[in-house]
Image 1: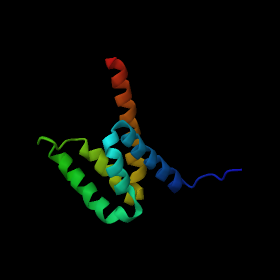
Image 2: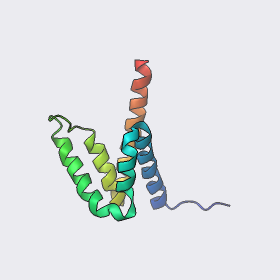
Image 3: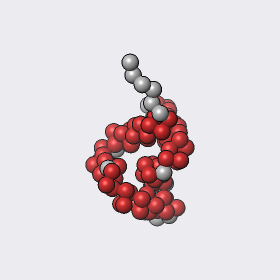
Length: 106
């Protein structure tokens, strides 16, 4: 008989699924994302997350864009559990909308 997951563990798994979905949708991101998600990467993950969020504010420049905001927030949610419900909900809703847009374009 399996034991029910604690809410914090359930949110952690939900966050992990969002990272897996990104890695699946954009395969070249799989290795950097998995490196940043590792236990010893917190010292790198936090500055990278903050830089991505700041970079998204400069989305009018080439290369920088709004794609940086959700990735930065997801990385930040790894270390700040209070962000996990909001960030994962937004990520799921965004993925659903993208899937709908793709279906309409076919």
